[in-house]
Image (cartoon, rainbow, N blue to C red; front, side):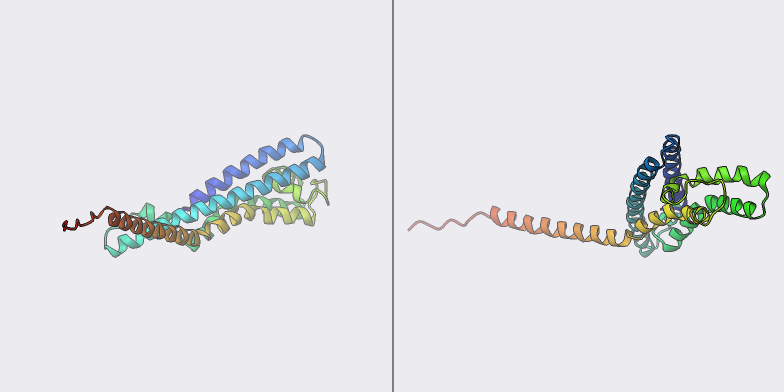
Length: 212
């Protein structure tokens, strides 16, 4: 997985959630938005985790390939190296993915605290839209977003990291999944060899005894 892979996946999922939550918001039913919004969010996070697992497994395969190439002292492909499994690369991907929505939230909070209404009002709308997939989490306690409260600030500061961190959690399962698949392949090869030996034994012709 490269940094761009996580960024594309999280952005696509977040944009889809934004459109769906804007549709739920137009229903003017907070209960429906809360229930359906949370279901959509949990489903998206589950898919993000599974996607991260796929990224991690593929990245470990590339890492194993790089080790083989390095052992053979062959030139390493930079594109492959950038996609190989690495904790540091995963952390960088999380930060890169969360950067823009986090800055948007920070800008709205700062402008609101400084009471720069001419800029705070449009920035509030932008930050509200960007964080809309996560508003159902606080709807049972607050129904208005026209002023900066502790709950609103918490959503703006935490939400940018949720999707990337869930994807990263799945990505960190890569070594475990790779070891499991390698073990399964090795066991499959052993079974195949054992079966071939049995077949060969069955095919050995019996020696005919001379008649007396």
